[in-house]
Image 1 (cartoon, rainbow, N blue to C red):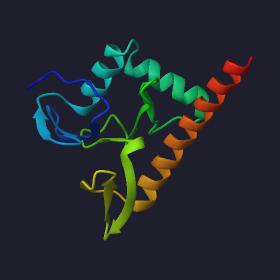
Image 2: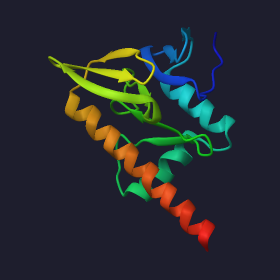
Image 3: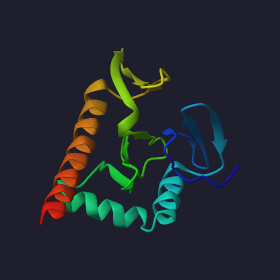
Length: 152
């Protein structure tokens, strides 16, 4: 399979290598012959933007420059955050709304999703928690802006 768009069931896009990613959905997993970066870019384009456009938006909202979470699709609250720099082949992407808990496991971290799926990630718990906070802040600011514009 080489076409995939992020959707409400997507929990994570896990990098396998430069040309392959493991898609983890709520009820299934499969390999896609595309990099995580390309899947994110294709998904953003599918929903009317580009990865670079989404990054520019996140930069402006968060006043930050690196490892930015992105809003793949706004109305469905599809916000994903990278596990490391998106330029790295090893970068994976995690759905903010589906994370239940984060546990330390030595040098690694276990992300537990709301459906019980556990994903081992080769980065620190601190780093993942920081990414969750950043993505949550993005979501919060956007929700407030929407509420203000509805009232105005």
